[in-house]
Image 1: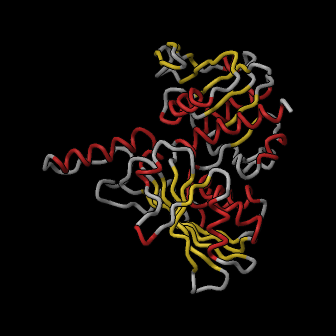
Image 2: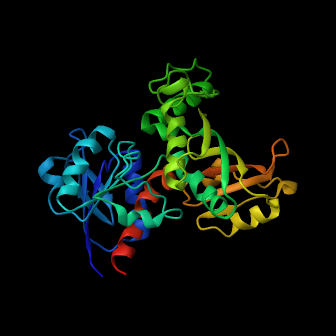
Length: 339
């Protein structure tokens, strides 16, 4: 099997460090790894694969140095500038920013859902939004068997989705509370996140929806291949360090038995059904942390609307919602190229 030259761009960030952890676990057939970051982190040392790697400065010349695969998590502006340069040199870019997700020429991939789209790439593959990824793993098998007419998302998103600054806001708030001090002014969020829920993630865009909410709407349609699917979302930041939780309401095209839905989910790739309400067993954010699977439970009929159901869905937003999904795309790409 071919050995691949792999670059990790944004290697010192929250997602970048998770890239490295997942790569160590999954052991891709790599000839070499090169770690890149901005001027602020370039020159620092990172322990990876039992070796000390010196983080390189990301430049146009450096990213054109003959890589086979590059995992990007360094923000939209960096991806917009450097991803095409890497792709032009023959590298497959798997990008974690929102920059390329809705480009009609760029596949938007969740490997359990639409792996066939990987080979449609023109040098760049987009990694979906974290909250969209976990929903797709659960919705796809239902869509394939029953058809989905409408989706209503309500998300409860961990502060790690806002990076190190978001984690720090919650940490500092918790420390202040424990010490009996006044909650410090937040540095990342508009309001203190400790003991609070903030019904705004990202800036407001169309019709008073946030960009985060519109990402879920548009990405769901693109990944499932149903451009006119009725989808709406409300996205909320909550005082949880890791793992996003989602309440999902579905109206299906066809009748169903709720036990058949549960059986379908339990047998689906990447899904763990945790649904024993008599014994208070259901997915928890704390239990999903540092895991790659998507956990689903509280699966029940919505009797207010024909052919409808509710479910509760939880996943680690940094792993499955970002790093793991990107590495899985690389794994699947390698598998397809070696068939």
